[in-house]
Amino acid sequence: MKPTCRRRRFLQAAGASMLVPAFAPAIRAAGAPPSSPVGIARCRKYDSGAILAELETLMDKIGGIRPLVEGKTVAVKVNLVGNVRQDVHGKPASRTYQVHPAVVLAVARLLDKAGARRIRFLESTHQHEPFEPYLKAAGWDINALTSARAAVEFEDTRNLGKRKSYLEVKVPGGGALYPAYHISPAYHECDVYVSLGKLKNHFVAGVTLGMKNNFGVTPIALYGQHEHDEQSTNSRAMFHDGHDEPADGVPHELSRTTPRRPSFRVPRHIVDIARVRPIDLVILDGIESTSGGEGPWVPTQPQEPGLLIVGRNPVCADAIATAAIGYDPTAPRATGPFPGDNHLAMAAELGLGTNDPSRIEVVGLPLAEARHPYDWQPPERNI
Image (tube, rainbow, N blue to C red):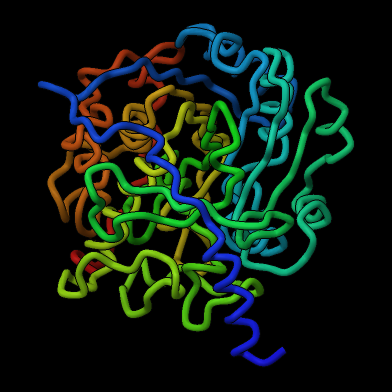
């Protein structure tokens, strides 16, 4: 198919999108940003039964899982960044930079036991393979996952897939980079949204946890590098360097005069997307992970924190997770793990949640006992 034909068909799909309101009101909290309890558990092995037991205990301590999900459709955005077949440090991706299948299975059972009606696992991949075989290659037990009482679905949101159109969702308050985004309806057609991330550093954002995992909500077909079409598997470089614009028919950048630095753009995109698709529950796989970056395309070191972390407020959860790996989540820009702007501080400033650990109740394992310093600092600042 010629590029012009591909583009015409693509624009028809994008143009069919309907404008929906933002998921959360653009109201900044009066006074200090809100706080919500965060749970930490010690877990050193990828055993789904043991992980499930720890998650159930933590959820009970932060208010319970049943009131949140019973009778509802729950979307779970997983972190499968990169290639599921690419090992690093002699370990598979799931034991280093991607969420482990045992954690996925434990989360499915947690939601199923709590009465969820439908569980939808979502990710935006960089490959053309059908999603379920790709998940099997990552070690996912599809049969065990689909044996739940709840309906269990798997959807790659890098493009339209089987859907007919995207949804345009405005950023509350107007946005820092873009006024609105087109996203898969899968992120809208749910009652509860879970970010299931990994406890690791990010080369540009400093840390990639519950909020940074939300980065992948934006479909590559619309926001991929260079030519935009439904077959694209390119990176979302425009959110890093700002050299490209989204496809025609999709809201373009508010200003082309803002800095093109990744350390300026990535934190703002993280915060904007956290407002476009608010997170109802963060679950972090910190049993094994890496420091130094988000995947093997940057220098990393293996880590074994032996932790599970959960929280209802993504800013609070990420703040405690950041502290657990040895950093100050309130650090000024270009200090600590942050090469540039601190997206946790930016989110707190907008009233999305507090990033001050002294204001966050930690339940389960005390933070002092959970600490596992990664001892990584960005090689450059303001990159």
